[in-house]
Image (cartoon, rainbow, N blue to C red; front, side, top):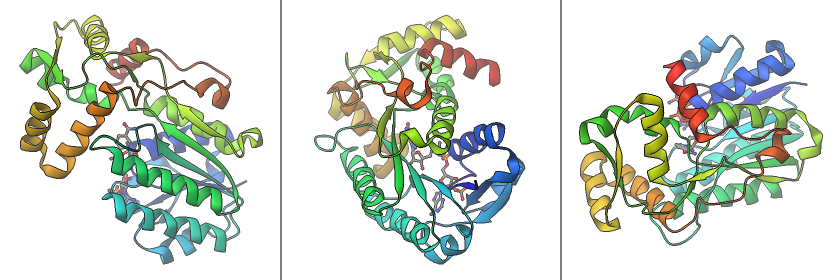
Length: 283
Ligand SMILES: NC(=O)c1ccc[n+]([C@@H]2O[C@H](COP(=O)([O-])OP(=O)(O)OC[C@H]3O[C@@H](n4cnc5c(N)ncnc54)[C@H](OP(=O)(O)O)[C@@H]3O)[C@@H](O)[C@H]2O)c1
């Protein structure tokens, strides 16, 4: 069985490729990347695939049985077309199964919702393809918070508009394991899984970070308006609005969802505290 993974140059794609290699051997794993040179370190065959270019995927998906489609990074409306390029090329090439990395979140009501809507549209497109499918709805990665740690330390606080809202964080490591099961085990076909860990507040997140890193962070809750303005000033309108929208969603409960991780993997999702410890040990 040949399994291909798109966006293999990215952190999630690379994690899935690495888990797959352990499970089915590197000769059965193909990485597809817009920038192949960035994926060569994975030690598997790498083929070129830019989501904007359907011809890339018509070639890259030759001889592939199962495909892992990592959701794109572009503006919402562009993503739908980009994902369709990959799905159509999969159909033409006789790919038997698609596994898609979607997202947890509210389809309405916050500035992240347009992204969630496009992920849901691709879920529908994957289902309509007629191929076997499995959909994973990823929780928010915990790693970006830890990459941001220096800024949190400088500020002495984690500051956002999530209030007391709970978030089911996950990690690319946990997701790599889950997607490998979903790709290789037939019993998941036709399922949609929330791939998330335990639900924690921002105060708990600060406490866990303090426990692992010996910091003294507190959580400061700010209004949605102030946080949006701050993020737009720091990151620009597009990304700033998305980030503010994610925390609006957390505040309103969009990321406090039941976990299907055990159904997908047969084992429990690791705790937030352990994910933070694992990140510290690796970096
Ligand atoms: N759950 C979460 O918290 C969360 C957070 C951020 C993003 N996401 C979603 O999860 C996806 C994967 O995350 P990640 O951690 O792997 O992100 P990442 O490390 O930033 O990697 C992004 C990947 O997208 C690829 N890419 C961008 N535009 C492309 C295009 N037109 N055609 C093909 N590939 C393209 C990049 O390729 P190059 O190497 O060529 O740039 C790179 O491989 C993201 O794309 C996004 O949809 C989820």
